[in-house]
Amino acid sequence: MEAQPTTKHERECLMEIITPREQIRKFFFEKHLEFLTSVPQQRLQEMILSGCMKGHSGKMSDYGECGPAHRTTYGHFLAKGKWDDKRLEETQKRESFQTVSELSRRDGTPLFISIDDTVLPKTVPSSKAKRPTQGAGWHYSHLEGKVVYGHQVHAAIVGTGDTSLCYSLKRCCPENGTKIDMTLEILRSLPNQTGAYILMDSWYTNPSVLDVCQEKGCHLIGAMKTNRILFPEGKRTSASDLAASLDPGCFHPVTVKGRTYMVYRYEGPLNKIDHAVVLLSYPPAAMGRKCALRVFLCSDSTLSDETILEYYSHRWTIEVLFRAHKRYMGLKSFMVRAAKALDRLLLVLALAHFFFSCGLGHIVPFHIGLHLCRTAFVNS
Image (cartoon, rainbow, N blue to C red; front, top):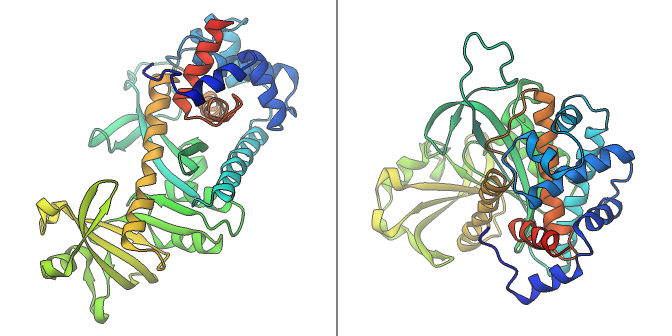
C-alpha cells in the first residue's frame, strides 16, 4: 500500500492499537454489536481482519488462509448462516451516522451524504452453466461508457470535513426497487431535521428525491441533465438552450479548490419543482461549447455559487470508497454465487470500512486504518 504511518497522528494511532484482534472485539462492544451471538461475531471479525492481514481478492480462500476456519465455513456463513443481518445493517447505519453527526456538531462543519452506484463486471455465463452467479444482469457502466454484465451496487457515504464513513452498500435488484427507490429509502432512514446536504449526480436528481429531502429537513445539491426545463421570466426552455442564449458577460468566474469556472446563476421554477437554484457552468477554455456545459441544482437558496460548487465537490468521497473497496477488499473480483451471500458480503465490507476508519482509537481515512492495522499485525 502507498499509505505509510509517517505522520505524528498515524504513529499515535499505531501506538494505541492493543492488538488488532483485541481492538476489533472492543469495537464490536463500543458500537453495540454485541447482540450477535459469539460465532457470528467471531466470523465477522475474522473476515474484517483478513483484509489487513493479507489483502483480499474476493475469494473465500482468502478468509480461510487468514482465519482459523476452512474457506467453506465462510461461504456457508454468508449464504446460509443464521444471524441477524438486518439488525446489523441498521446498527451499522445508526452508529456511522451518529459518529459523523457528532463530528459535524463539534467542529461546526456541514454534514454531507453522497449517493451513487457502481457496476461490478462479471463474466457472462455459458448457456450450459448449471450454477451461474445469482442476481447478475446487464447494467450501464459510467466508467466504461457501455452496458456490461455484472452486479450493480448502490452506496451512500456520510461525511463531514475530512471524515467519511460508509452508510449503506447494497445490491441493486428488483426486491430493492429501482435506484431511485433505494435512494428514497436511504433518505427516509435518516433522522429528521439534520440539515444535511444530499449530494448526487444527474441520474438521481429528480422531484421525488427533492420532496423527501425537504420532508427530512435536508438540502439537495445535485448535477442535472442539460435538457431539464427551466422557466426564466416565465418562458419554458431547457438549461442548454438558456446557456446558449446568454451573453458571455452574464457569466462570472467562480474558483473552487484552485479551479476556475464561468458560472451563471438561475433562481426560480423548474419543471415539477417550484423553486431552486440552478448553476450553469463552463470551463473558461470551453465557454459556449454545448458538450462542456455542466448544470447543478441546489435547494438551499442561501448558499453562494462558490459554496454550492465547493459542497458538491465532496461527492468525490463516494468514488474514493468504490476505488478503495475494489482495490483492497475484493469488491471488484468477489467470488460468491448466491445473491444472499453477496448481500451479506457487502454488509461485511461496510462494517470493515467503519472499523478501519473509526475502530483504532482515532478517526483516520479507511486506507490509512487498513495499513495501520496491517502494521500492528506485523509488530505483534
